[in-house]
Image (cartoon, rainbow, N blue to C red; front, top):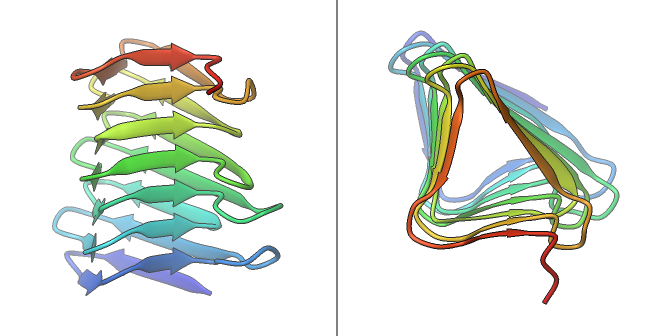
Length: 165
């Protein structure tokens, strides 16, 4: 299935599912100033979520590629485009995940786990801010690339690279 929110449209729910089980897939585009998708709890991305041209998404936790053998992809692109999480972001929880932040897009979370996946933050004004820890490659398979003036900050805690507990 697919969802498009644009031209100032808004949607709110408790938990957002873009696909869910292995073999399923969903797609959402949140585009344009004033366009918002508000999740009062978590969002699960098995498929694609594109936040662009000033679109905004908010959730407690963001789980990208959350089910076994699944793939999730989130792109936050353009000035004013934001994904705000009051909890964690997890890439590749059980499946694979990717997060791309570019062209001035911004993402915020408390904690971040890049388990089975990749993150790319690129371009001046593009930023990923964590107020807690960031773990990259907890199992040795996650990676992040930061370039072209982009910023990643783990303000309130530590960054773990290749950490296994």
